[in-house]
Length: 106
Image (cartoon, rainbow, N blue to C red; front, side, top):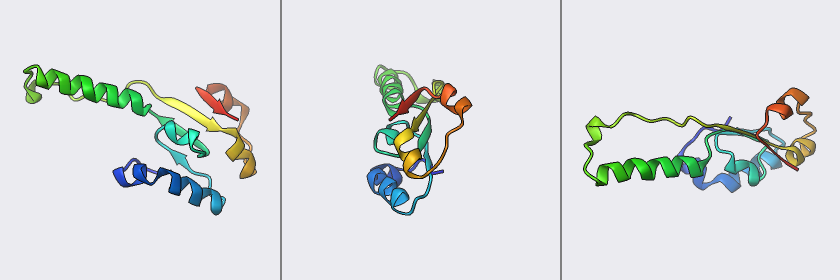
């Protein structure tokens, strides 16, 4: 499980390549990693997170006091499975997990 970190996000392609090189199954937080070739990811989509940040910043720029604004967390999450990577790692993804997946990349 690769945690969220600015450094890890900036080195996403390198991390995925290293995991593939050493045949390590890795799970990432952001679904955008799956498009780059990770095994699977579960978490909020970055576009949703950035949109929420912009909306929050907009409230502050319009005069809201940051101290008065509630703490917000993502409410929508996506499970993405990369089937080609699973096959390359000789991993069989259970059918019940595939049914629950929001997206499967072949």
